[in-house]
Image 1: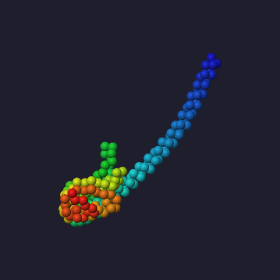
Image 2: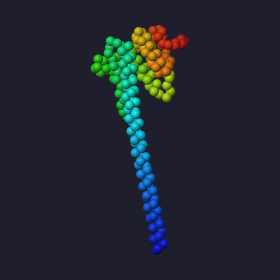
Image 3: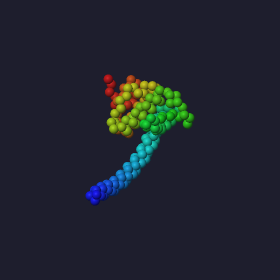
Image 4: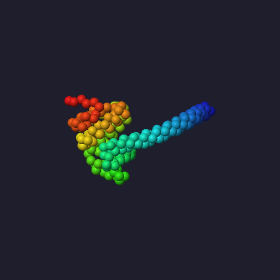
Length: 183
Protein backbone atom coordinates (compact mmCIF):
# COMPACT_ATOMS: atom_id res chain seq x y z
CA UNK A 1 0.00 0.00 0.00
CA UNK A 2 2.88 2.32 0.77
CA UNK A 3 4.22 1.79 -2.75
CA UNK A 4 0.78 2.60 -4.17
CA UNK A 5 0.70 5.82 -2.12
CA UNK A 6 4.19 6.73 -3.35
CA UNK A 7 3.13 5.95 -6.92
CA UNK A 8 0.03 8.15 -6.59
CA UNK A 9 2.05 10.89 -4.93
CA UNK A 10 4.56 10.71 -7.80
CA UNK A 11 1.71 10.98 -10.31
CA UNK A 12 0.21 13.88 -8.35
CA UNK A 13 3.61 15.64 -8.30
CA UNK A 14 3.90 15.09 -12.07
CA UNK A 15 0.40 16.44 -12.62
CA UNK A 16 1.12 19.49 -10.44
CA UNK A 17 4.42 20.11 -12.23
CA UNK A 18 2.75 19.72 -15.64
CA UNK A 19 -0.12 21.94 -14.51
CA UNK A 20 2.34 24.68 -13.47
CA UNK A 21 4.17 24.34 -16.79
CA UNK A 22 0.88 24.61 -18.68
CA UNK A 23 -0.09 27.67 -16.64
CA UNK A 24 3.21 29.32 -17.62
CA UNK A 25 2.64 28.37 -21.27
CA UNK A 26 -0.90 29.73 -21.04
CA UNK A 27 0.39 33.00 -19.62
CA UNK A 28 2.99 33.20 -22.39
CA UNK A 29 0.31 32.50 -25.02
CA UNK A 30 -1.93 35.13 -23.46
CA UNK A 31 0.88 37.71 -23.76
CA UNK A 32 1.50 36.66 -27.37
CA UNK A 33 -2.20 36.96 -28.10
CA UNK A 34 -2.24 40.47 -26.61
CA UNK A 35 0.77 41.45 -28.74
CA UNK A 36 -0.88 40.03 -31.88
CA UNK A 37 -4.06 41.97 -31.09
CA UNK A 38 -2.03 45.16 -30.60
CA UNK A 39 -0.29 44.60 -33.95
CA UNK A 40 -3.66 43.87 -35.57
CA UNK A 41 -5.02 47.15 -34.18
CA UNK A 42 -2.02 49.01 -35.63
CA UNK A 43 -2.61 47.42 -39.06
CA UNK A 44 -6.31 48.19 -38.84
CA UNK A 45 -5.56 51.83 -38.04
CA UNK A 46 -2.96 52.03 -40.82
CA UNK A 47 -5.44 50.47 -43.23
CA UNK A 48 -7.99 53.12 -42.30
CA UNK A 49 -5.47 55.89 -42.96
CA UNK A 50 -4.51 54.26 -46.26
CA UNK A 51 -8.15 54.08 -47.35
CA UNK A 52 -8.72 57.71 -46.36
CA UNK A 53 -5.65 58.71 -48.34
CA UNK A 54 -6.82 56.65 -51.33
CA UNK A 55 -10.27 58.22 -51.20
CA UNK A 56 -8.76 61.71 -51.02
CA UNK A 57 -6.46 60.88 -53.94
CA UNK A 58 -9.31 59.49 -56.07
CA UNK A 59 -11.64 62.36 -55.23
CA UNK A 60 -8.99 64.98 -56.06
CA UNK A 61 -8.09 63.19 -59.29
CA UNK A 62 -11.71 62.90 -60.42
CA UNK A 63 -12.49 66.46 -59.30
CA UNK A 64 -9.59 67.78 -61.38
CA UNK A 65 -10.63 65.64 -64.36
CA UNK A 66 -14.30 66.65 -64.16
CA UNK A 67 -13.36 70.35 -63.91
CA UNK A 68 -11.34 70.10 -67.11
CA UNK A 69 -13.68 67.85 -69.10
CA UNK A 70 -17.04 69.06 -67.85
CA UNK A 71 -16.42 72.65 -66.68
CA UNK A 72 -20.01 73.84 -66.82
CA UNK A 73 -21.56 70.82 -65.11
CA UNK A 74 -20.01 71.13 -61.64
CA UNK A 75 -19.61 67.38 -61.11
CA UNK A 76 -18.07 66.00 -57.97
CA UNK A 77 -17.42 62.32 -57.33
CA UNK A 78 -17.37 60.81 -53.83
CA UNK A 79 -15.93 57.42 -52.93
CA UNK A 80 -16.72 55.32 -49.89
CA UNK A 81 -15.33 51.93 -48.91
CA UNK A 82 -18.00 49.66 -47.43
CA UNK A 83 -18.10 46.10 -46.12
CA UNK A 84 -20.46 43.81 -48.03
CA UNK A 85 -20.64 40.03 -47.97
CA UNK A 86 -17.35 39.83 -46.11
CA UNK A 87 -15.40 41.94 -48.61
CA UNK A 88 -14.49 45.59 -48.86
CA UNK A 89 -16.12 47.32 -51.82
CA UNK A 90 -16.19 50.88 -53.10
CA UNK A 91 -19.32 52.94 -53.62
CA UNK A 92 -19.06 55.74 -56.16
CA UNK A 93 -21.52 58.62 -55.93
CA UNK A 94 -21.91 61.52 -58.33
CA UNK A 95 -22.93 64.98 -57.19
CA UNK A 96 -23.89 67.90 -59.35
CA UNK A 97 -24.17 71.27 -57.63
CA UNK A 98 -23.89 69.39 -54.28
CA UNK A 99 -26.98 67.28 -55.06
CA UNK A 100 -26.56 63.53 -55.49
CA UNK A 101 -27.51 62.36 -58.98
CA UNK A 102 -27.49 58.95 -60.63
CA UNK A 103 -24.02 58.37 -62.06
CA UNK A 104 -25.56 57.37 -65.39
CA UNK A 105 -27.05 60.89 -65.61
CA UNK A 106 -23.51 62.13 -66.26
CA UNK A 107 -23.50 60.23 -69.54
CA UNK A 108 -21.26 57.61 -71.07
CA UNK A 109 -18.35 60.00 -71.39
CA UNK A 110 -18.23 60.69 -67.66
CA UNK A 111 -18.53 57.00 -66.85
CA UNK A 112 -15.76 56.17 -69.34
CA UNK A 113 -13.30 58.72 -67.95
CA UNK A 114 -14.08 57.69 -64.36
CA UNK A 115 -13.59 54.07 -65.36
CA UNK A 116 -10.16 54.68 -66.90
CA UNK A 117 -9.04 56.85 -63.98
CA UNK A 118 -10.09 54.19 -61.46
CA UNK A 119 -8.32 51.52 -63.48
CA UNK A 120 -5.15 53.63 -63.53
CA UNK A 121 -5.36 54.26 -59.78
CA UNK A 122 -5.99 50.64 -58.83
CA UNK A 123 -3.41 49.22 -61.22
CA UNK A 124 -0.93 51.63 -59.71
CA UNK A 125 -1.72 50.14 -56.30
CA UNK A 126 -1.38 46.54 -57.47
CA UNK A 127 1.71 44.36 -57.46
CA UNK A 128 1.78 44.22 -61.26
CA UNK A 129 1.58 47.92 -61.87
CA UNK A 130 2.88 50.02 -64.72
CA UNK A 131 0.75 48.85 -67.66
CA UNK A 132 -2.94 49.12 -68.49
CA UNK A 133 -4.46 47.75 -71.68
CA UNK A 134 -7.68 49.43 -72.86
CA UNK A 135 -9.75 49.06 -76.03
CA UNK A 136 -11.31 52.42 -76.93
CA UNK A 137 -12.12 53.34 -73.34
CA UNK A 138 -12.99 56.93 -74.18
CA UNK A 139 -15.12 56.33 -77.28
CA UNK A 140 -18.28 57.82 -75.63
CA UNK A 141 -16.50 61.15 -75.10
CA UNK A 142 -16.90 63.94 -77.62
CA UNK A 143 -13.85 64.66 -79.81
CA UNK A 144 -12.82 67.79 -77.88
CA UNK A 145 -13.12 65.95 -74.57
CA UNK A 146 -11.05 63.08 -75.93
CA UNK A 147 -8.19 65.49 -76.61
CA UNK A 148 -8.46 66.88 -73.07
CA UNK A 149 -8.64 63.34 -71.71
CA UNK A 150 -5.44 62.45 -73.52
CA UNK A 151 -3.64 65.30 -71.78
CA UNK A 152 -5.00 64.27 -68.39
CA UNK A 153 -4.08 60.62 -68.94
CA UNK A 154 -0.58 61.62 -70.09
CA UNK A 155 -0.09 63.68 -66.92
CA UNK A 156 -1.38 60.90 -64.67
CA UNK A 157 0.81 58.30 -66.36
CA UNK A 158 3.88 60.49 -66.03
CA UNK A 159 3.13 61.16 -62.35
CA UNK A 160 2.58 57.45 -61.63
CA UNK A 161 5.34 56.22 -63.94
CA UNK A 162 3.06 53.88 -65.83
CA UNK A 163 1.94 53.31 -69.38
CA UNK A 164 -1.38 52.67 -71.05
CA UNK A 165 -1.66 50.69 -74.23
CA UNK A 166 -4.88 51.91 -75.74
CA UNK A 167 -6.77 51.38 -78.98
CA UNK A 168 -8.35 54.53 -80.40
CA UNK A 169 -9.61 55.68 -83.78
CA UNK A 170 -10.20 59.26 -82.67
CA UNK A 171 -7.79 61.65 -84.37
CA UNK A 172 -8.15 64.26 -81.60
CA UNK A 173 -7.13 61.75 -78.99
CA UNK A 174 -4.25 60.31 -81.01
CA UNK A 175 -2.81 63.77 -81.69
CA UNK A 176 -2.52 64.48 -77.95
CA UNK A 177 -0.96 61.29 -76.60
CA UNK A 178 2.80 61.00 -76.11
CA UNK A 179 3.59 57.91 -78.15
CA UNK A 180 1.52 56.58 -81.03
CA UNK A 181 2.04 53.37 -82.95
CA UNK A 182 -0.24 53.15 -85.95
CA UNK A 183 -1.24 49.71 -87.08
